[in-house]
Image 1 (tube, rainbow, N blue to C red):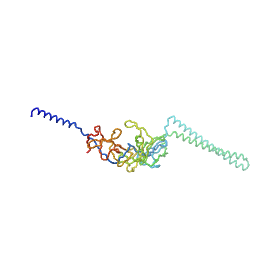
Image 2 (image 1 turned 30 degrees about the vertical axis):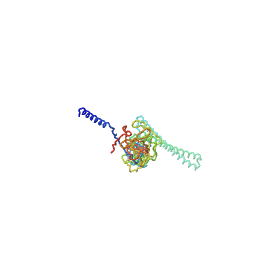
Image 3 (image 1 turned 90 degrees about the vertical axis):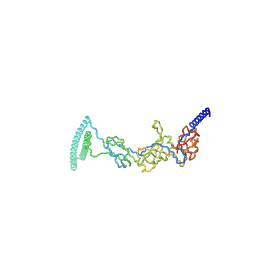
Image 4 (image 1 turned 120 degrees about the horizontal axis):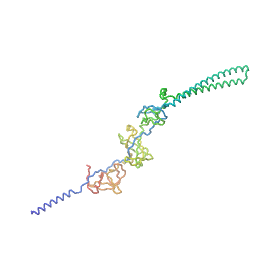
Length: 402
């Protein structure tokens, strides 16, 4: 072989190898995707949010009168019996200390009271003496009238004088009582807080009793001290009468109705059953963690599960609630992450002979994980999850599954 042919053969073979290498390097590669099968099962459509347990009826015991409250010896969690358990006792407030001027005035009132009492005693003695004289005159007149020494008019005058003096004595005695009471009142103005504690034998207390059976939930003021009328002291409720309040977005709340089943989770135990009792007829504005204003509506949920299964739940505990809006048995369903919008319709990529096939589908109810397939798919087909922009109709794909 001539040198020219050898060079042509060498460079031709080298070019062919280079061409084959380029074709192998830049050949279309199969796109690796995640897939899932369309299958039948139960599809539960729910809406929910975090909720909080609360006792249905909470009673706040307040001070019915102003006074000195004794220390509350009860503790949070103690059981109470309606109309029997004494929660707190309030006694009269101690008098205030007198400033020098007020004390001098009170002492002067005491001296004036003593003088008034002495004057009243003298008036009583005078009235007694006059009554004795009038009684003697009446007895003398009655004897003289028998001898017809005096006239009937004179006898009547003696009787009237006797009755007048008797009434005057009663008036003087009443005046003495008034003076004595006024003296006691004046002396009471001089009593100090320490003296009232010494003379006080029994507590003239107002007892505050539990209005219902239950437990003490919170003690708002436990230490002894002066309280004004209406001061909240203790909260009482029945832990067995629990309910859940969850604030839903108003767009979700319009789908909720009384009687719907509720799944209660995230409280530290097995899932519980509940039932929607009330959707409150008014909403309120709430600022979310992102600083967005949201319209919320409170939904009240009653427990259906037995008390034994939720004995550890109490007032103010956080729970996760899922309100069941729809429940489909033996439903054809697919993962929600396989769906995407193709114009105005929903579509998926179906794995067919190693290639992705674009297929429009009709879906029904859906939750945050799965969607109900109405038309477009059959059971057992594989669909692409999270299709990227590399996945197109007819593109070769390979599944990571298996």
